[in-house]
Amino acid sequence: MRLYEAGGPDVLRYESETVGEPAAGQLRIRQEAIGVNYVDTYFRSGRFPLPSYPAVIGGEGAGVVEAVGPGVDSPKVGDRIGYYFALGAYAEVRLLSATDAIPLPDDLSSTAAASLLANGLTAWGRLHRVHAVRPGDLIVVTGATGGVGSLLATWAQHLGATVITPVAGESRVEAARALGLKHVVVAGTGQLAEAVGDGADVLYDLVGRATFAEAVAALRDGGTVDLIGTASGEPDVDTAALTSRKIRITRSSTGDHLPDQATLLTASTELFQAWRDGVFGTRQIRTYPLSQAGQAHRDLEAGIPEAAAVLLP
Image (cartoon, rainbow, N blue to C red; front, side, top):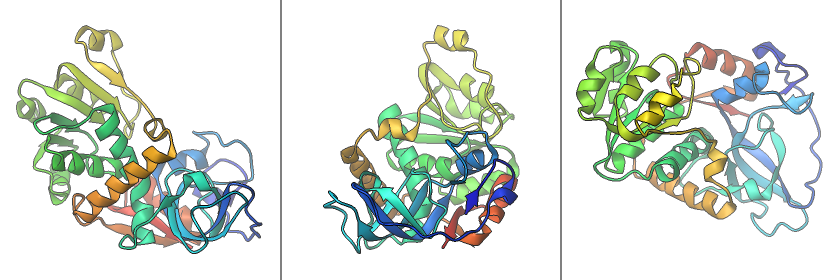
């Protein structure tokens, strides 16, 4: 799926190309599944500018190595691998740096891997690097029914934290509880302040403007605000007020927490084990043919799929 300019979903064009041999340090991957993430719509629309056009977007996928370039000892031809952020994913066959490859366990399908890696590794970085979650921590997660939020909230709960999840309305309460989340409140009703009592240790914020003021007010002095997403727009952050309360503000990318291949492999191993242990419950996956990537984007932007979106080449 190639685009020649920024714009709406219709700029995605389904075309053919011949993929050449991998260069030094590269793999050629025949993909079996491609993750669709909201950030993909930003690259498509131009909100996040691409280096040049024509371009192929998408950063997450899983498949089988069909050729390796000079200097690559691992992985080998025939190995199953995934990756979490390397532009060029919306394709049947692609080239990939060998250092981006994550070995996939036999019990994890490519479709499941493509729905899990980017969101799951983002959650791992927040739970192990931004704030090392421990039993007894009191945590607020906004956007807990979304891709990153659902993994982060359930994983934090599994690690022993008490996780409070404010949702937009009564209609979202059941969706949060279906994930196994135990402390679901409705934003804007006063339930959040009542639930946190003396204040939460950490706010993982994926919503932004709509709930930010209420969620920050629920933090204890000396707590942490981790700005992850802005589903409702950029929040109004009163830095001076937060500083006066000794509240730490962080904003980082997933890559900041995975600085080398050793850390990436450690994080992915822990992610796969959490999935294997049922920490995330039964995750729903909505699949589309690669040729219908535009429709996947329309559904994502409309908030239609209550599931992870995956393209199948």
